Image (cartoon, rainbow, N blue to C red):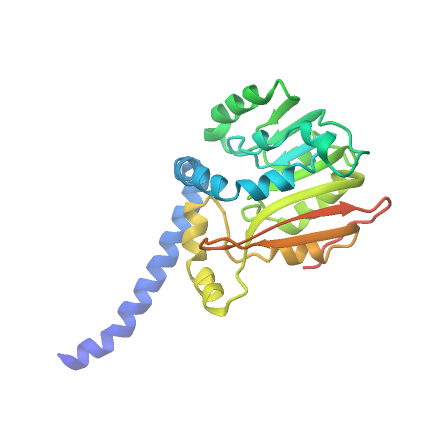
Length: 263
């Protein structure tokens, strides 16, 4: 009896691993096909999002005060960025050459966030024109909704963690900016600490399922830093008590640049 148990244990473990992998891929496939992941994330982020936004608000206020001219907001969610965009900051900033915000092009593919996003846009419509594109940045770029060299500012507010082809999108972002344009970003990235990093790798598959593609172990800050085509890159770590490492920064496009990203 004991011999049988010992012999069957590896088989049971192997069967459990295979079943888990198959179940994961089934949930991932059907969750994407029937928008189940997007629906769940809308409810999940509806609770967690405001808490995260409040915790990061002073950093967002400082960062997004740099926005000017024509702005692209990538992955707008329900529109939390709009409240930080204010033309009063143009008068108070150190860069007197910046023009007021004239238009915000908002990109958000999650259909379950659209209604709240529209409501947020309506509340901010007295400050500037807002155009909503209900698609991914890749789709908008490929469909011709976005043209290279037409944006003064591009904002990524906790979104680069979930974009499938991050390298390509970073190149697209740089191409979409005008010469001298600003890329403003605030993101969570892989931890510098070994145990934290190991834990992020461990739970990343499950987190990605419930977070609609969000990945905990990306090195977004390093990728932006090592891209060619930037005149200047400034990245700082947000040092407040929180479970994951967050960074925020500004990358300014060169007056004449050819974009590429180190993979």
